[in-house]
Picture: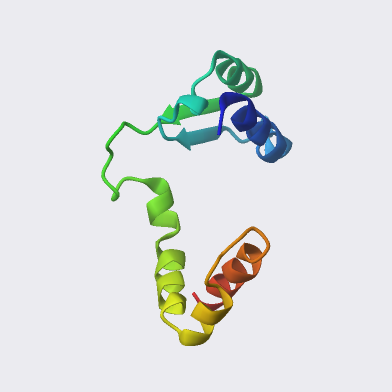
Length: 107
């Protein structure tokens, strides 16, 4: 990930959902790609408030850890099943969507 890819991701996946009635707060870690002048200027222009999570933040305060906790637990249960292991020994981009759907359906 670099700054250009990250900005393009924000433009493609967040910008289409922006509205003046609803402010957006973007929580992000301290990856160097998340801190560029171009990104900050874009966010100011679009009304996106950037909030960086401090380095070495406990997993209890990490938003993604909290949101995806049940999905991770379900994935762990699935990984223990023999049929699952035979089908998904190597999880590549082609197999991941089916795996994610299976985990979500079972959570």
